[in-house]
Image (cartoon, rainbow, N blue to C red; front, side, top):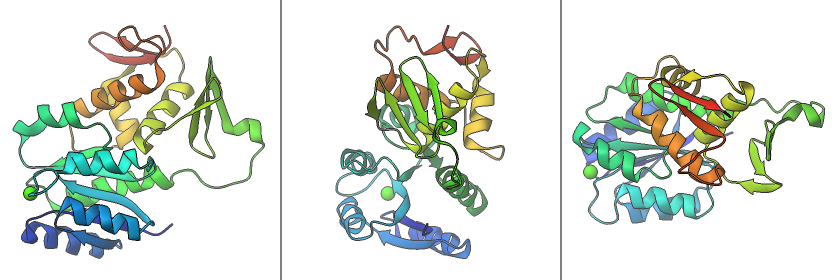
Length: 234
Ligand code: CA
């Protein structure tokens, strides 16, 4: 797998800072200073695995770029949003319909690279070893999670998941019926060295519910354990 990352950032000083640090950590980098250019570059570089998207841009914004990447059927790409202030968090959680993670500016190179590495690990995490087919399937009710292909089916119909959503589903299906705290989920999915806050867990659970539940107002599969976290089933 190529370690290719797209950096979309209109401020050239921040962009260079990102590019230098990513290259130093062994990533190949494709740079864009507008959303339009980013989408164009992604068309030409099909091997980009991770996109870092600034939100505030002169043309279409980072949310729109993210939406279009997912709308084009690219569920496998890792997407990290770059947000300017913590005040943007409400907007981020509300609009973050397809991103895997976000980083708040100003960020340290260590923090940023840790996030990119963690996402990259999750994406390439499953070794392509040959195992008996049934060992690759985690089944629960109408769901079948194929851990080799990293795909989810509900009643035989494929549900497209982002890398983070897949990892959360696997965590639930590996631990059916046990209550998991939001902190446990955060550490299991985003890694021990994650710097972000617990809201990211709720954002992703909400999104996952929209994809898998019959009635998101009354979730039957991912249930809430009030004041604690979530569990699979009742
Ligand atoms: Ca900007």
